[in-house]
Every structure is written in structure tokens, then in C-alpha cells.
Length: 326
Length: 279
Image (cartoon, rainbow over all chains, first blue to last red; front, side):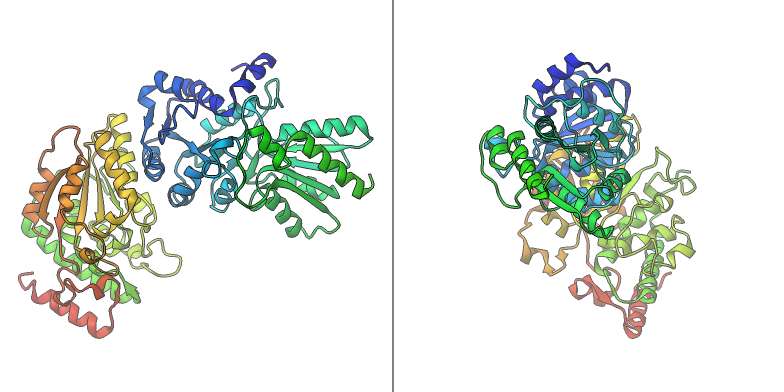
């Protein structure tokens, strides 16, 4: 598929969930073993066109996430690459042990697609928020975790996963219109982080659609004061790219920004790297969601409430720069 | 290589397999899930000694029948059977419950030995088996899937999610067997969770239920060969006796998980021999 600037504008208005469904439809035309199953959230996963195009490669298994995971794993033994989608907490927690045994332990060729993760479910509240999903999946061996930063990257991730043998977890955040990071085709490889912006003073690590807010904040600061940020798109959180480890070693101020609990996500990953490498004199600022149940609101309100809007990120970065005397 | 159904032979094989169970349980030591292993032997000997279409020289053939042991703690009713019928070689079988062995107290997926899935946590195998069965149909492969669960295992909600799914998706290339021995870890199933009319519960979920004596090989043969209505999944509700074959273990839930001392081992072997003087 030809990725163009116009398309990126269209796609950001559709949002990651819709683009997931469209992407799967697109890749399924070439990859005949792709199969999609949903626990009654096919339309919410943007799969309406997919299921009409490939009715023989789609199932709605019913509102039964445990059966969804087990069934998908069994199906995968016949050579199918099975994409299963549901809201982040349902698929990571309701069916957590199925994920552990079937995907982690048996390494079934099943791709979990966690839709509506982070705070994107807005007024649907904590029952539907994906606050801990990375933390949970990261503690299970053998499951790569991929968090696309915009709708193009959703497509690139689905395309990569359509050719990837083994279990994986795809985390979709953000509500339309989502930020646009990429406007043309680019190289995406599972496990390889991507530099969005090179710089030499402050390292910013981020993933998911929140990365767009970080980029806006960084651009604004750089326009105002003389300051150099390096912004890295850590789209794969497990395994973490060695490049990220090396970047961390080369900066004294590192800021991780994510739409996930401060427990177990990128913040924890960066802390672990710092501890494991015995790095002293590094300041690590963690911007993420407090580890508690959160308020409801529109996505925009929530970004603001929990300091993840580009304005709030801007203010936080300025504060840090002041204490660091940049 | 279609085998003939020979009841006498299978009965003898059940006796020899039970001997193997006692021996490996004694030699490997420690606590063992004996009761639930012994209750499933006639069904397992029937499957591996006669029914399953499996080529032991090509255990990954896509056209093989699949057997899933969902009640994963039942390995004493599984590995000795796989060893007896040539799927697990003796030198591997001997390593059961030794450090680093591939044969531990719950199955670990290993196609080399015909072990289709990792189990141990209850309520997983039926969903997995249904997925395989559905996949076989999509690929136009006429193989059959057999899944064995326990009656205690029917406490798990995931079993009923799978039960709904099996009939809704009209998966008729699967046979589910319930080893209905009426005990679970803490005692009699009837005293823990009300499972009265288990047969009706399953038929109300859209399964074709055939209730049999799970130790009677003629019953077993008839049930497995009974042609089910198209599009309806089949369930064999096999009434069994926990600890079957060793008189003092039968219906004695101390043997859900127990240890064979030297004395008890010899008593058990004697009890087994006394009941099988013909062999």
C-alpha cells in the first residue's frame, strides 16, 4: 500500500481502531493464513469491512475472552496467523492466564490486539481503560509488545505482524483525530526503535499516540530556547532495542513519556536499564499515569488532567530544564 | 494400518498400563495424582490402542487425530499410555519427574511424543481443541479431535464458554470425554459444587451426550463409534471410578494425590494382580 500525506490526514481522522481493521483487511489480501476473531467487538475493532470481505476468515466467538484466546491458539496450530481483538483490560486480565499458557508458554501464533488502550475510552471509565496492560504482558515471557505512535504505524505494525511467526501484543491508544508523526512510508521493524528527532542534550523516550504530544511540546521549546532534544519512538517495548539502552547511557537527563501506569511500562523499563547498567548521575523523569484508578472525561480532558497533553508536557519539560539549569 | 477392536487385548493392555503407572509412580517418588490417572485408563487404552489415527513414525502429520489432555494432572493416565503404545520411548519415559525432564507432573507440548498442548491449569483444553477442530474443517482435513476433561474441571467457567462455542460453531469433528469419577481435589464433587444432571447441563448447551460406563470397553467402543448428528458436537460422559483397578484406592480420595511407599506399592501391585489373574 502506498502511504501518502493525504492518506495520513484521512487516517488520523479514522483513528487507530478503525485503521487496525482496514490494515488487517489490506494485509489479509496477500497473506492467506490471516484469521481474525473478536469477542463481540468486531465492529469496535474496525473489522466490519474485513468480515464482509473474508467471512470465512472471521469469527465472533461471543463475549468470552478466555475461550477466545484458547480457541485462537488451537486454530493457529493449523497454520493460521490469528489476530484477536478486544478492549485492553478484557484481553489482558480477564483472559490473562490463557494468554500466559497459550501465547507465552506454548508460543501460539496469535496476535493480541488491545483496542482502546490507555485513556481513549474516556467516559467508559476504569473498567475499560488500559492502564496496566503493558505491565501485565511484559511480565509474561515470549510476547513482543508493540505500541504504534500514529495510524501509519498501526498499519506498519499490522503488516509486520502479518509476517511474524509467534505470539505478540499490539496496543492501540488514542482517539481521533490522532497526531500525525509519519506522512510517508518508512522502515518499521519489530524490536527496532526509531529516531523521530536527533539531539544531544535531553533524551525523550515515548510510545503510543502520546508521542505526538511529546513532539509538539519539544518543538515549541526548541523554538523558544536554545535546547536540543533527542526524541525516540520506542514502539516495541518488549524486547527493548539495544539502541535504546545505548541512548540512555549517553544522556544525563532522560524523560519517559507514556500513556500507561508508572508501574511496569516504559518508565519501569528505563529505570531497570539504569539500575542494571549501574548508571549514576542520570536524572530520569517519569511522565505517565499515576498507579491508581482514574477519573473519567473526554480523551482531551483526561490528557490534560493527567499531564499528558502537549501543553502539560511542555510545562513539565520547562520545569525540568529550569532545575537542570539548561 | 487400521487396527481391529479386540476387547480382550485392550483389557490386558489396561492391566499392563496400570502396572506401568504404579511402577513409574513408585520409582519417581513423591506425591502423585494416582486416582484421576487410574480412572481414565480404559478410555486412553481404547484411544491409543485402537481408535486414534496416529502414525507413531510421523507424529506431526497434519492429518493425524489429536488428543488433548485438558485435565493436565492426569499425566499418570497419559505418559504410561504413550509409552506403552510407542510414542514416548523408554529412555525418555524413565526420566519422568527427574530434574530437567520433559515429562513432569503436567503435560508440556511436545509433538515428538504426541503431546499436543501444555496443560495443568484446568479449563484450557476444550477451547484449544475446538480451535484445532475448527481449523481442520477450514483446511478440509477429516481428522478428529478428542479432548479429555475431568468432572471437577467442569467447575471452571472457561469450560462453559467453550461448551457454548462448540455447539454455536457446529463443531462436529470433536469428541469431548468427561472422566466422570465424581471426585475433585478436596472431596466428592457433589459436596463441593452442584453438578446434578451433568448430562442435561451439557445437552442444554447443545451437545450430543452419550453416557456410558467408562471402564466397559464395549460401551466405550459403541459410544465412540456412534455417528453423531451433523453439526452437533459429541460428548461422552464416562462414569468412572477414581483409583480404578487398585481396590483400596477406588473411590478413596486420599489417592487424588498420594505417595506410594514401598509397602503400599507392593500392596497395590498385589491388589492389581489379584484382580487380573487371567493375565
